[in-house]
Amino acid sequence: MVQSKGINFDGQNIYIGIDVHLKTWSVTILTQSGYKKKHSQKSSAKELFEHLKKHYPNGNYQAVYESGFSGFSTYYALQEYGISCMVIHAADVPTTQYENVMKSDPVDSEKLAKALKAGTLKGIYIRRKENLDNRSVVRIRKTLKQQLGGYKSRVKHLLYNNGVQLPDCFASPNTHWSKRFMSWLREDVALLSSSRIGLDLLLEQVDLFRQSLLKANRLLRDLAGSPLYAGRYSLLISIPGIGVNTAMCLLTEIDDISRFNNQRKFASYLGLIPTMHSSGEKSCNGEKTFRGNKKIGPMLVESSWIIIRHDSVMAAAYGEYCKRMKPQEAIIRIARKLSSRILNVLKKGKKYEYDRCC
Image 1 (cartoon, one colour):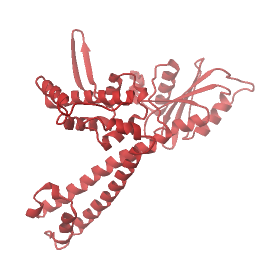
Image 2 (tube, one colour):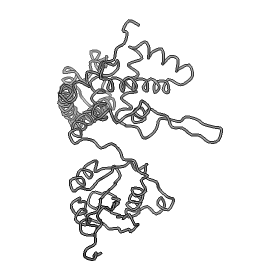
Image 3 (tube, one colour):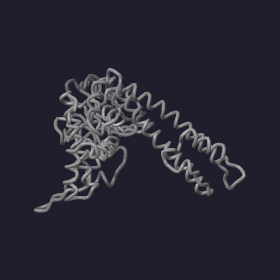
Image 4 (cartoon, helix red, strand yellow):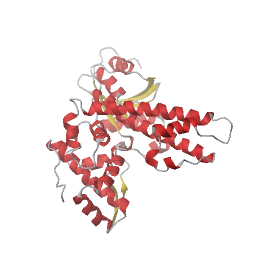
């Protein structure tokens, strides 16, 4: 399209829906008057800006895309060119039956542009750039721990498959993976085959992931003591059941606690609010909402199992809940109470105090 000379969109909003992919973007542009144009381009904020400047000069550019593999990189790239941007959760986009059936990249980008123009979208929280790497450290540490556990399980499975019995000195699981245990695995274990290449490969991976996990743990402790986190970290670990891993996961995932106006919004973000189904005179609560943060929620549930063994108030509450619901449901209630304590200490800036003698 070649615009006539002298065209000017000064003061007008230009709505841009972007379906983001690795190599290409599918773009729909809507003007205030309802004029619509679609095109496909390279994944480039600069190319989009040049297109807008040429065909929609001096407009107030507003873009939207769904959160996904590109994270916040697209957002920051568009911001550098003066394009206001909103990142939204895919489940929050109003979708017609036609759009569900005739799903394609151009349809998706048009859907986004229309919803942006209608003002029906609510953007997700945009993280500060400096928070992104810190969050990655915490997430990678968890991944390393899971992978290390997987390789340890494979080693034991290989031993069982070969009929290897653990000596009496390793009868207790607490002795497993010690220096002595690793020496036994390397030097004394004989498999059914004359060779043991598979076992040695697994042991190499165990060593590799243990070293990586140790490094990640050191980095995590350094972060906890850094000026950015030290104050808030000390607040969180004053709560029974909250240790260094959970505290740093909370701080890096939440980033800014002021974005939560009340406890219900915070619990919803953590995935601790049940879904609700209501029709006529019937209503019932379902399982936890699928929209919660998948990193923090499970950690708080684990912490809740610890806290009911050390906090008399939580222990009493858990006992009462168990009288009318299953233990797995009761512990979710405890996790919600725990989330309330977390929100309070971070909002008020005061350590949690409780009576250890109760």
